Length: 487
Image (cartoon, rainbow, N blue to C red; front, side, top):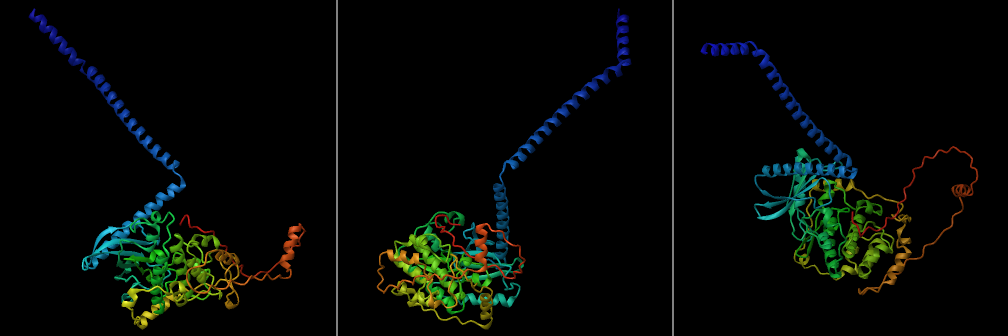
């Protein structure tokens, strides 16, 4: 029995040993096939997930509108610009050995492009100040690589001291980046524009001025206007012309005192926001630009919105009808009976400002600036780059009497009728006489008028060859007021 069992086990072991290959190979093949199928299933699932994600992303891009794409692209550019400006500011503050400490990188609180605002802490004087980094315009002739020019600019702006001008605390440059660094005092009340629109100074520019503002009281307009006039007159008397930079955003408020800023923009060649509207009206140069800009500021203080033209009509003046005294001074500036824009001294001596007393100016009468020859050269260079443009037509299409302005009036008849319908102002001075009625002169028909009449009748015209070497004149048309929605 034992021999039989041993024989059976021996035969079974020999059979397994002889058939080992036939058993292991199929099992291994089955396991290998299963592993391959599992691997393929995992790979296929991953590919499906990746394709689904790519499809969703492409569909989102396709469904995104053009305006949204442009907005995202612009936002990316602004973020990159802000990051670059922050690095430049930190590099500059390290280079001046800890004079300022970074407090906050503000958003675009102003309308000027290529400018960044920083709230910094002055370690020496222990107060907050506003630092701006602005790229020098390509049209400027001032070279920041010239050490003598930089020194002259710093010394010149230190000489500007006036109770109604915002002083320049520090002026510096980053020549490698063509950046102008300006440090001035920071006001928590903000600018005069913030007072009009009831906004906070650190809010984004596009948000805080999106709604119409509220006009000021008559006493405030007279006081603030007289303060701005005195500061502006001091600059003009010393050779500086603000040239359109007189606007409410550049008037900083300190304890009910206006301090004009932005006068440095003219030296470096930064364009003013409203310079195009002003230059269409200019006939005598830089003095007229300053007066017209001041008139637009007066209108904004009264109406609570910006004036988009230097030829206001009755629809503009309707917003100031509650203050006929303001309409009188605006008419004196924009539609003077003598046919020309008054000077700053004439506006300052007008009855609207005549009885306003400025205590700060009486206590501290500023002395004239002692400018060096290099300073005068820089001022003359900046003024010559921005001469006034003389146009033959005003914005509303009427011809201006620039050759002999004393013989005609620029006041339109409908504006004179509107001012007559208002109650008499309380300022005790004789009212200016109404302007003369316009004289309509009939001109004899010319070849052009005959040609137009023939076209209207449908007559057959002969083909002619002309040699026209004249330059077409562009006519300016007056835009409607945009007070309800500011740009």
